[in-house]
Length: 238
Image 1: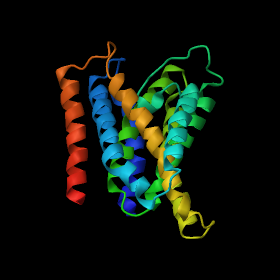
Image 2 (image 1 turned 60 degrees about the horizontal axis):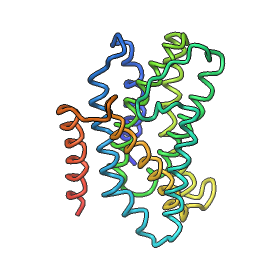
Image 3 (image 1 turned 180 degrees about the horizontal axis):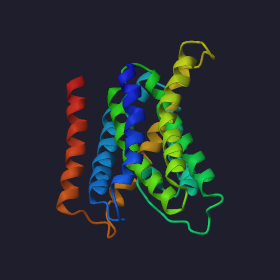
């Protein structure tokens, strides 16, 4: 994978998180549109690209790992409070322990997403992860600031989160090249876990894109644009 893609993964999350200093107030309408777009795009590439690729190797257990990924994301969200899909909750009484659970779950989440990138041409997955991490990092920074973590500490945590997806790629690449072990035949199962995570996140974004669970016209256009771009990428590869 080209180094520009590694940089894209890092800077999408880093700038997504640090852009919180450019906005004021809790009503981030642009962020909500980006979130709707990224959720639709994630769902599109998962259905059109990732699932068929994962089953290409005729591994009968891929579906089991998709379920594991889906359920695992539910567990992670007990610690992250749904920041992966843009939720920004406040925890004024949990200042001492808040960053630990949030950061551990988010970093593990991002690390797992980066692992399948070492297998072949995964351009759409790179773009999907980068888009997905923009609102996630923004939400993380917002919650950290709300909980009085300070500007420097917030930037530090955002940078750590931004490193995780590239770290997952490099770790998986080392596995596949035999530098750490010979586990490349498990890539489809790793992809299955990521697919389950993406299915949970993308569907949650689409169902929770507004407070009353209804789409307005702008959000509908963002969702259609996300699906259309995923479909165009799929047709281009045929």
